[in-house]
Length: 210
Image 1: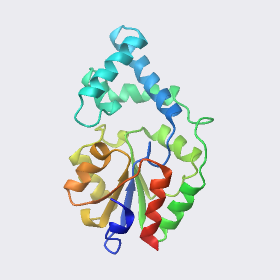
Image 2: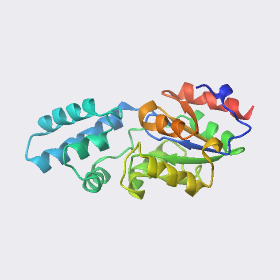
Image 3: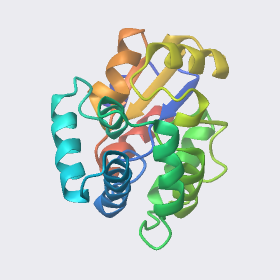
């Protein structure tokens, strides 16, 4: 759905996914996947290559576009332990680059809407990512995997987020790069959605304030 088709006059808040939406960088994704492989290898007593193969199989079999979190859970992993390891091993510093168009867009949108983030990342990594891409301090609330330890998509968590930001579904726009993970559930509850897989697509949201 493109921005001009949204009912901007009804919207009060925008909830952004983080990875793949506010930035795109495969290098950080590889670091995250490598950390997950190390965790599973240690958990199961197998090699990292074998763990990687298991993860790929589990993600391919998932109904939710193969999120890493759900794949790890399906293989018997614990999300708390996984993210503790990721906090130690994954470092966006020196990997992610600033694209000034993104913070400029968010500052523009913040003149009219409340801005929030909802991510499957942990707090430490989310904070570091947002600092690297220049968007720290631009969101009223940031919801991470650590709030409930239930990965996207999850209806109970989504309803709690709407309650926490004090908005009705038809007053809220969800923005993400994966329809099944980020957008299908909000849409089913009556929220507006906007799919953005590139920064160029994301910049289409500027139409909401014109």
